Length: 411
Ligand code: CA
Picture (tube, rainbow, N blue to C red):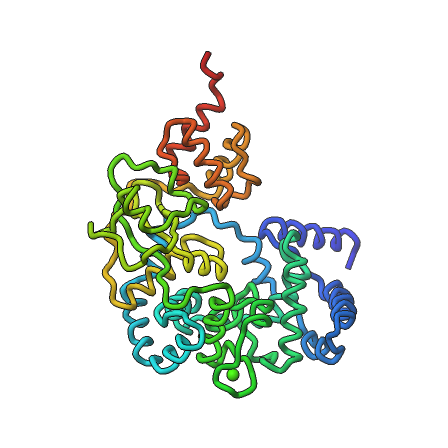
């Protein structure tokens, strides 16, 4: 190949990489990396044969890198998310599974204390009850990501890859059976390898923890994870509630916990159907408003926070709780969602964070994701600006913050 042509090809490849947003990967570089990773793995006590077997003929997966570099621009509202997470069809399948797996689920309840419906809800959300456990080879995905994934997360992927190699070496799963999501989550309940190592259990007694081919192993592993994280046996995750008019919205804060009876007596909080809060005794709870003060309200108990340890997203925890309740036969929510509100997209969320931070309400980072720190900063700003302090970001807040940033402060 002439030098000009070579340069042209190289430029085209670099351009393609920039345009398609992923790193081009040369096999020889990857081979070099595999050699270095093997040294690291062996130094950590993994046998050279295990690494050789896992890495033999292994090529990076460009599809995984494309998925890793994708930024979600449009995000679902919580009501759109709940509608698909707890669809009629999923509730019906969950109820079928509840009957089908009753003996297993009862045994799991005795041993781990997690109600069957919430195990089913997690199974339904993670893999649609095993219909979509993922076909990506865990080793290949993790090796690709540890080698050329998002730079900030490469150490994390490397740790997961070491963990996957140990699982392989331990004999729980084989190179062929260890499969899951593009991001390395394995099987029915999508355990990442380090979670697998720490919490997976062999419940069907064949000597192997297999989260792809054994439903008893997968569900028991989830129950064990929740139990080890502090799940309170048989306790609810939350209750939909009704709030009195002129409520002090600043009390809807995940750090503000009160005994249920105090919510009822001093704050006049009732169950959504208007009946008295009861049955949960003196359990402590915080007030959770997933779509702000205009949407449904919940008292969230200790077990809600345990679901967050499984997946640290409030909407996920809500979906697990709600889907589980529906599988158990509870009615749909009574509160209405603010359907007229246009959700903030990723860019707008980042702009809101930047404006809040510039105004002296630090969101502790600007990443376009609304987490606990952003909600806390927004709540402080809402209080100072005369908005209901519900910590829920809207287009109205963004417009207001933009205006504040361009106008000189009032004299
Ligand atoms: Ca097993």
